[in-house]
Length: 195
Image (tube, rainbow, N blue to C red; front, side, top):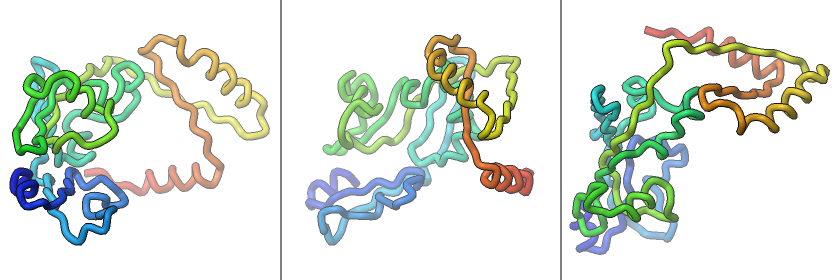
């Protein structure tokens, strides 16, 4: 498809999991009357290798498919980083229509497609990501303060001065909500029905 589009001078838009809220996979910025959409949504498998603590994730996998298979953006990101920090390998189709992996593309391009470059360097077909281990014990707690309480201001001030010095196994967040938004979030969460 890439080779054919290049041969005929057609522009390409790639749709992976369809997660772009603006639908940029279907938009042309330069008044191009037509372009080819390469839709990868059927490439959505997530293959976990428990032995190597890694997974191959096809480019069309949605956030939900990925999350249910291996987890996702969560409380352990301070220790393990984001997905881009844990990419071990990748398969892309370059502008010449060749399929490249980390070894055949070289370390510079591998660095660039993980976010180190300013543009698109090919169509990602699948990623190999390192998986982190979840600790056997996880503690979560909630501290609520009202706006008038001076403790909140002091807590934020201390957090800003110690957050980068705390052990990586400790992750903490500060979320500021109004009473109205908090009630809506809790009510809507309680309304969810899980299978």
